[in-house]
Image (cartoon, rainbow, N blue to C red; front, side, top):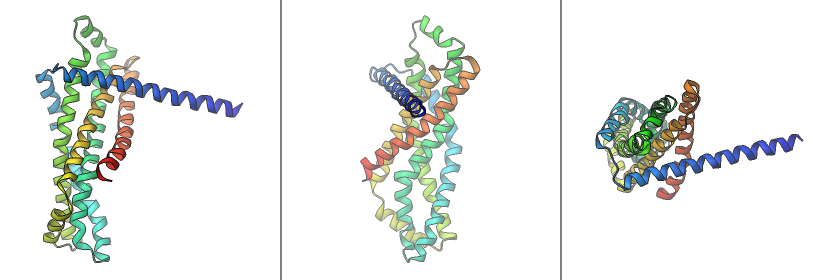
Length: 259
């Protein structure tokens, strides 16, 4: 009986996950179709670009700089110990462009923006503002989701470029002053080992990250039920689901792009 209940509960949870994945996928497809049809409100899109991109800038700058410093600090000592100190710059360049820059940006934006989007749309849902839009003949996807979808897809790559530059620069600072690494060799090996595709591949990943963040956060917000408690649950669920999805998708994209 115990095993039977365990199997039923596990099966039910798996079914719920598959059902939720299907709903989010259909929601994302509806959003993409609205974008392809050119149903874009430029004013709302620019407003969301400011909220998603510009207002996330300080957090992304601080996070990427100090993570770059810590990463360089950890690898510099080991590389110098084995006589490979000149390759620290190359490893930093590849690591920041391929993984750390995109991952830091995705996590920072997901933690900050996904919660804000889900809370905002969830509040609109429980206060019946979404129903009011529909009664006026306005599509919530076109009016609320598409601007956030486009803004996240555009601003994440821009934030990633800044994160890569600051993380690499922070690594240069630490490697030079604490790791006894020649800054000229640091820059030279970075230029030699880091390819243009490393950066482009990372930027493509963040475009996909932006789409994922916007779709999941908007879907969770619009699906909120039950007043303030429902909005809180939708907000928490949006952040957790988005982060897990980003880690999984990042793994497959890294295998596809950089294997």
